Image (cartoon, rainbow, N blue to C red; front, side):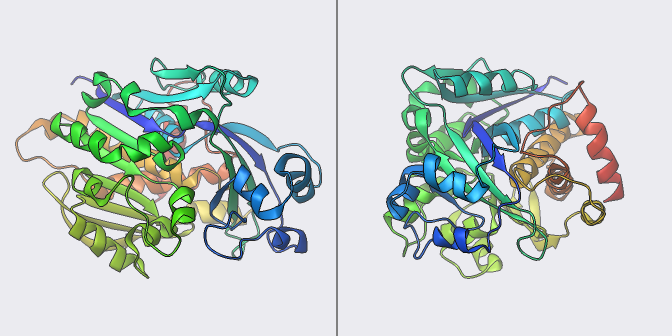
Length: 394
């Protein structure tokens, strides 16, 4: 069967990861958010560098970061961003069954060149990855506390959007919409794409693509109106054109305005989404589907990987950066492998979302074994072999 074409648009940036930042320390509490959208730090959430500087009255680069990290350099610099990290994992998982393309941009600075060199070590095609002249490449300082939440670990993100401010829907060409799977990943960090999300999703559906949205913390809408739920991109009209929505616990609550996950899933169902997956760190994953593509799957939960939890307790090192993004990539990769199966081409065939979720769970768990979101393979199929072992144990 012809390879499945996966195209994704959204967030790609350089992650600078600082491990062992104590979120309970007096110094960290000095910069904690006092009310929603004020620009302060919050475990598990994202703020923008300029907003944090406005909130604190201090420079992030010269004051805040050196204080929180005790002046040390980043423990790791890696490819980050909900779209690109998910696409890389999908390409590594379905390396024989798919071809994967990324649509996005970088600046023409040293950071952009460093990021490009790292991206060239992955199986994702970069033909549509553009350079914005005179712009700064997007980056995120990832502050990680592995002891937070009773040892489950958590991260806080300080983001610089940079060139991503200028990337437009018009730069996404016809090839994107002619893909088998169209992924919209972390578009809240690519503002113009986020503002055009409904039209882009609608066009992808009209072209017959499967549409997948995996979200990121939407600080711009949180700041704009912290008392109201977030819109999905430009409006709730995006939901009916979304075959699969992948969100984490916080994002599900803020997008829906609900107080719990079951109510949030009901909200997404009523808005017309075909299927929903909700992650919550080291806790169970919620799954629901009701569509011709995925069939009917009542609300249910799947546990995270016990094998991963055991390995972490035994001292296997890494951090939780990129776990959610790799979860999304595992789901996408599994769907591509299922689509490549000759059985899928038969009339009324459906994709198995529960099976895809299992690959997402082991992909997210495996990301805890190394620093940063992206695993760079030494050869094709390397990561799939490692994930297969975790999948078999799961």
